[in-house]
Image (cartoon, rainbow, N blue to C red):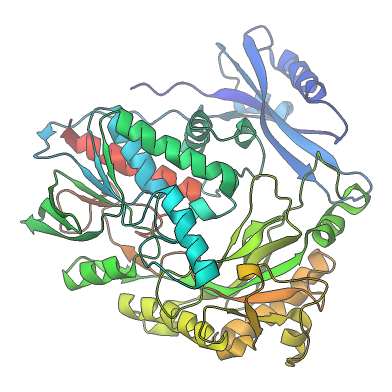
Length: 537
């Protein structure tokens, strides 16, 4: 497998939002002429487009244009003179297939981004993986979520956290990643082949939307099966048999399945799996994470605050933001922003209330929401993996009680939260959680005091950056606890094998090595490559 050479990207082409893409391409072609590659550059396409809304009276699109072709890459000085850079084409890294023969097909546990992309790559190279998913298909998940929201019947295996596509299926489908990995382009391209909109290839904040992501997940599963893999839904991984560090089979709710190598991409909410692995001696360590609440505003308020008189312009779409505030000891930041979305019930255990955000591709809902979360350190909960899990679970159970012990969510207006009162009912901004199944409650009843105090300080800071962010009638809904896995399954940095194992590969967000759809997918790809580098099909 060869790694293709890179290509030149012309950056910071700023144009009015009324300008056409052709105008951006024209600017890039002029720079290519100055660089001496215009004759060899065969195509010019949008590589990235972002919005510069720092001046509300002059909002701009900022383009990066890729020039692809058969040319010699210019040196750094020449590139700098025309504000250009060299980017990787996103090919898979070069690797050699291993010599060891698998005793049975590889088993992949989990169909979130890490598991799906690992299984896809294995299937494409003839490894015929067996994929285990404790939850149901997309259609089954949709039905179970309906039962939960309408009838308060919670399935602990098929819900917003577990099932086809993992937790990301019921989200905004955000694909932003800050890891700067060249495989990001590969992941985005692969998603478009599975049905995602082509806009994700160049928008600065790519997203798919829950409505489209569901069909993308179905397409990925269909492709794995077409290539000879097996995907078993409603099949829970219970344990595995191993000798001298080599897994020989996995025990599941359907019985024992032979296993040549095991990829664990279990997701950040697989607490029972963590418990089983810890008790079996797997090296699992605690890590820092974050907890907090979801804040809801009217989408029109956020659009106006961000875009001024251009709010509502269809070329801009619903406004997005990403905010952070650092104290001397902790960070508070916004996470998983869902423009035109809703706050969803994301519990996966009985007697717990968990919230998350979701929006469809059009992002046309009345409210916009995001998580506002505060960092939690190992010293806050006891510095063990078990204590990390208990810390999250305790918050969720307290939120359940605070909401009335019937899966209603505790809410408070920002005004009451900041003043310490509890008297304002939601009016102009109405809660979206379970069609308004909420109860007024002070967050101090379910969140640690240090979390509440740090979020209070951050809201004032955020309000200076986005006018009206801390307006009195904005809503805070809790509890947001599943921002990332609270633990990490320790693995070797080179082989990606779990400590003490010869054929067990922890992967993705649930193993503690990713933080979102794209980074989890990348980790799944790298894990599959590591497996193939050791074993032949």
